[in-house]
Length: 324
Image 1 (tube, helix red, strand yellow):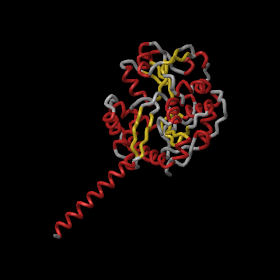
Image 2 (image 1 turned 30 degrees about the horizontal axis):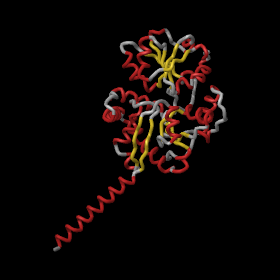
Image 3 (image 1 turned 90 degrees about the horizontal axis):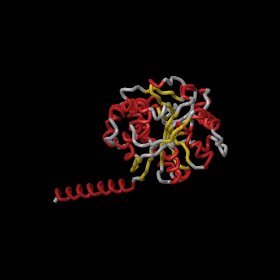
Image 4 (image 1 turned 135 degrees about the horizontal axis):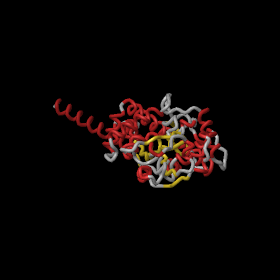
């Protein structure tokens, strides 16, 4: 009789635990997160957070979808197609100043600008001035051409003498290696994949940072609507992502393997190399933004473009989402 009672209690406890687990899983908040562009090794830390259960521990059911450029990510987040995204600060500023698109940065990843124009070493292009009279290709939504005016001003070259070509992302490496374009816009995190595609030819980067541009780049974005209605969801997502970022920086090889596991088309070694470069771009503490540097970023972008409406730091940055 005692054994039967004990077995009954154990069975009831198991059922209660199962019910609690089922209820917890059912209650997980669904989140769609859009990348700045495609799925690449540079995005490995999001999949590290996913693979290691960091999102699940924050009661989040996260779906990571591929974007078509920072401007596209901004539009998707503003429209609610995705609750959160990864986008360049310049795209957020331009969207707010010209089209009043209500998105803001909530955490920073690329504290240093990764924007660059890649050329072949054999091209004879060795300095910014050499870009004049040349053709550069990039996608329609890329942040690299959007910030080119600021780069040209900092590098003291004539932007009007450079021709930009719009092309699909998968055609860019071929355009460079075959000479259909003299250069292509890329983030420095993309160098490992580009170098592999261009081999045996060698590539060379003219970086915006080397020209003196000191501005924030890509970070996690959310819409004004989500910031106002569900700030806790954003905090949980940022916390889990930054834990994934810490792990990825500490062990790029593991991050590369995890990225390859989720997306076999992404080479694990290339992903590891891209993750290493991500580690050189982050600031400390991870995720934080400095209000003064936000202002400087707005000034640089505003100086390169004619914004229809003035943009203040509070228009593009929402503090309080990164744990101290």
